Length: 183
Image (cartoon, rainbow, N blue to C red; front, side, top):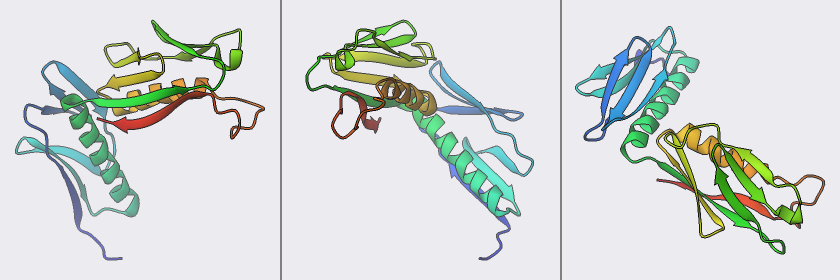
């Protein structure tokens, strides 16, 4: 494997999206919506080049190269999130007992899963301004937001709340499942 003298990942920002770097914190914003994240490492640095961002490493080792690629992916996700946003779609599947889904404040309630008397609850750890969760047509759930990690974690919390224990998952398939991860 050849030695590299440096690695530079260029992140082009969409039109109308701006980025600011203050120490180790990078903030990407567009029209009042912004995402901030701290990037700290002694060899990998983020710098602004001609209105775009660049992740730069001088004389990288394998771990530095991997970290630079990860940071570049995080920055691309942040730019895409403030520009377009992320949307996960979930679907409630049931065979006999009809489920009812509700969003109540910071909780997502799944009632009547397998005919259970006590409703299951998924925590929604972020505010509706950060991650929006809504139920459409009784069985479809839409999770939207600018931060990809928060949207994905919220969808995973909902899916995990319906996990069935001590039963064969091939037979007992009722639950709420992620069906698409898209824009």
